[in-house]
Length: 370
Image (cartoon, rainbow, N blue to C red; front, side, top):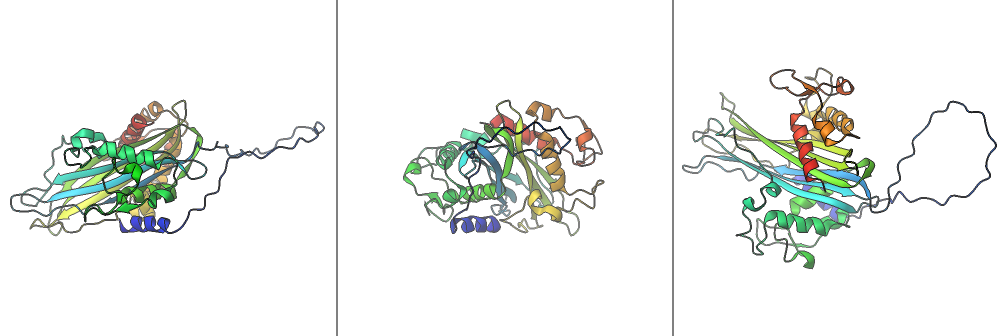
């Protein structure tokens, strides 16, 4: 999280300069010109004006790492743990937060007792903290008797009407070494006791990565899906568990059509040696979109396109469509590892990745939209 917390600190030390837009200039009446002969001219579309307080941009901020992974301890096998804090945020033309959804994908998976492979149950699912709701189990341990999803709701409500900079600069206090940034504002004293530094960083990143909506957005949704895969030890290669979390932030108009879409994936690998020691823990893992060319898909791609480019094409294809139209996209099987490649003419030369994970995340975003 070092890079992303550095972004948080940078935002905390300077004021954001946000240019307000979308206000109409007064029109001066001019004499009606004489009729002229029609000629073919190239029309240019004026950018849509956005009313003050309406959604102008949405962003997706993601902060993740594997620092909480645990070494084997006696009869207890090593545990891979991936913690990803996520914020989908809608901003108005002045950079103020209009809507926000915060969540965390905390995924744990065991290695085998002899550290030679993962010990995974194929039937396991990996819901986020918000989806777990009361099953997350914070209420009994909470000094205010509030479950995690309830605390998220309070924090989200507090953020409405504020800029990302104001959220980053929220007064905080340290409770202990594991809770170094508890909100220290009267409005949240009785409703939020979780440490929020990773959520602040995700909100700051959402602002940095915000994209314009292409219509009149009225709802924002966040969808998150997670899968886990294991690779056995082989010679010099250590046993590995990899957590793959796919996220989508969607903005919808009043007719349920997508007017902005951000898709991203974070892959978090955890290796364990023969003695059950975690080989490396990382606190600032980059998403596929953040890796850009370093993700390394271009050379292997039959169309010579990197992952972030293919994701951008898929995002653009969804604009103006309902979630039903998106999830019913025709697909084809390319090979055993690519069973759901888009089979539509518009994407034939731009998207060859398999899309079932992105579709599931988008469907989740639609379900959670509000």
